[in-house]
Each structure stands twice: as C-alpha cells, then as structure tokens.
Length: 385
Ligand SMILES: Nc1nc2c(ncn2[C@@H]2O[C@H](COP(=O)(O)OP(=O)(O)OP(=O)(O)O)[C@@H](O)[C@H]2O)c(=O)[nH]1
Ligand SMILES: [Mg+2]
Image 1 (cartoon, protein in one colour):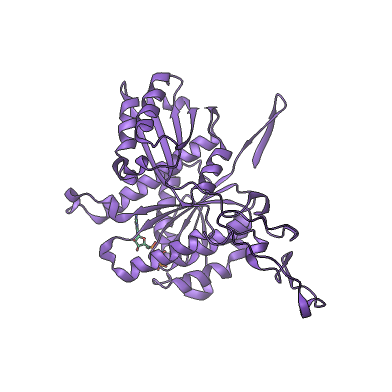
Image 2 (cartoon, rainbow, N blue to C red):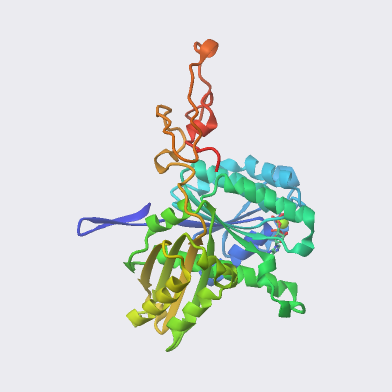
C-alpha cells in the first residue's frame, strides 16, 4: 500500500492501481484512457515499434526487440510469449508496490495472447492482485483467432484473480451493420475506460461508506476466475432512475440476466455533495429486485465535488462464489514449506513423502525457492479449479 498517512491514530492507505495495456489494441485503449484521465497510473507494452511510436501521454515499454525485430508478433502467440519472457525483469520492476494490476488487452493476436499469461504469472508471484480486462474476437475473425483467444484465456485464468471478458461481438446490435468497424471498437474501448475510471475513483477517493480495497479484493478473489462489470452515468433530476436503468439493461450484463444469477455483487456510486439518499435507494433497490436472495452484496459511496448534479455507478458481478485459488498469506514467492495440507473441498488429499534416495542431495534453490518442492505446494495452489 502507498501514501499511508495517520489521521487520529488511524492508518489510511490508498492502494496503488496500475493499468497496463498489452499488445496493440491494449496499448491504444490505455493511451486513450490516459488522454481523458491523466491521473491514471498506466503503462503500455507492445512488440510493435510503429504502434508505440504513435502512442503519447503514457509510459511505453517495447518488448521482444530481439525476437520480432521491432515488428508485431504477427499473430504468433509463441513470439509474444518469448518477447515478454525476455523482458520479464522490466515487468517485475513495474509491479513494485502495486496493489492492483488491471491488464487491458485484445486477445486473438500474438503479443496480447502470448504476453498476458506471462504477465499475470509474474504479478501473482509478486503478490499483486490481478484483474484482466480482455476483449474477445469477432466471429468474423475466424476460428483460429477465436481459438487463440480461448487458449490464452485458459492460461490467464490460472494466474489472474479475475478476468472480465468483453466479447467484441456483444458490442454489436442488429442495427449496427452499417457502422464503421472503428466505431464498434471505440465502443468496447469506451466501456473498458468507463469501468476502469469508476474503479479508480472508488479506490482512490475517500468513500462515505463501505467500499474499499479489501472489499474489491474479496470480490476478485472469490469470483472463481471470471467476473462481469458494467457502469452507468447520468445527470439531472432523474439521474438515480437513469443510472439504475443503465445498469440493469447493460449489454455487458446481458440485459439483467447476469444479475439474476449473481452470487456476488459490488456496487460503487459516485456523486457530488448534492447526492441524495433517495438516489442511492433507487439504484440499490432496482439492483436488489434483480438479484437472487442470497447474493453477497457490498456497496460504497464516494463524494467528488466534480460530480455535482451527476451520478455514476459501477458494478462488479460474480456468477460463482468460491474459495480463492491461492491463500493470501502464501501469495508471496519464497514462503517456507512447512505446512500441513488440510483437506478441504476442491483440494486433493495429497501427502508429501520422504525424499528417499535423494535425501542427501543439495536442494535446488532458485530465487529463494526450493524447486524440489512441487509448484502446487510451494504456491499453495489447490488442485484443480
Ligand atoms: N475492442 C477492440 N478490439 C480490437 C481492436 N483492435 C484489435 N482488436 C481485437 O484484438 C485482437 C488482437 O489484436 P491486437 O491487439 O492488434 O494484437 P496484438 O496483441 O498486438 O498481437 P500482434 O499484433 O500479433 O503482435 C484482435 O483479434 C481483435 O479482436 C480495437 O481497436 N478495439
Ligand atoms: Mg499488434
């Protein structure tokens, strides 16, 4: 945590959120976010010199110079993976003191699909909470590209706390056939940007009640790998009702169907000093009407003078509610192996045995870890998800 200050004997800490755009579409999306919200702490990473040279207003890292010679990975996931592996120390450096890493990428190309699984792994090893926002290809892009994106998703899921999938296909309505494709891409960029801005606002501004970093962490770590999000913004007298409508009809929540089976929900509201209780009630009641009775719900309200006359909301929705894959206490690399494996649901009752004829050999220590201890035990991974 950063910026820890003491007020009346209470430690107040603002979490550091780093937004990372990976690959060409991730880079463009994050650069656009930074142009509209210069307060964002962000970095973009790509193999493609041309894309990076055209990018301004954000920290830029080129990877894989020796792998792709400054060109893109050309759709080759393995080249994307190698490019980031070769520069992994730089990525580790970027993650120092970061509490929440938000990755933005378009899956289906070489750099994003190859690099994001590696970055999520590095972030997990560093103990950083990882949320990945990934767009999925249009159907017209073809099966090989869709398969590439699906494979990447599976790999990302083993390390990221939560993934928000944004299918490009869901950005399109029937009436949109004649719209320029650029406009459709802009739509998903806008959605991601609204979501990240709202999340950033909730976590970096003083809340009136409720929502803080640990609440977001609980949500991301318990959502069993995937979660959904939506945001809505409105101004004027009827802003409470307009925001409620915007959320329950949101395309990323499948017009309310995702809410109807939600196992967990976090709602963050931001208004000005004129925010009324009735507006909060309008939004919360509309959402509650849609939810199953036993949904875990947490909400918070932040006041920002710039939101006078306006109301903004973000919701994060989990369809599943499960124990996290890795225990918090053991997320850092290099914890000592000296624990009893408890037998819980979703965990195999595996026993460790003696080293037998290997007992007198020196252990293989790398970066403070004993590599002779199986990875799933060193990292306290419960098998399988
Ligand atoms: N939403 C959105 N998606 C995009 C955009 N551009 C590309 N995509 C999607 O993102 C996927 C990956 O494209 P890129 O980001 O260009 O690929 P990359 O990761 O740079 O990979 P390489 O170019 O092969 O190194 C594509 O298959 C598209 O589905 C965009 O501007 N907006
Ligand atoms: Mg590219």
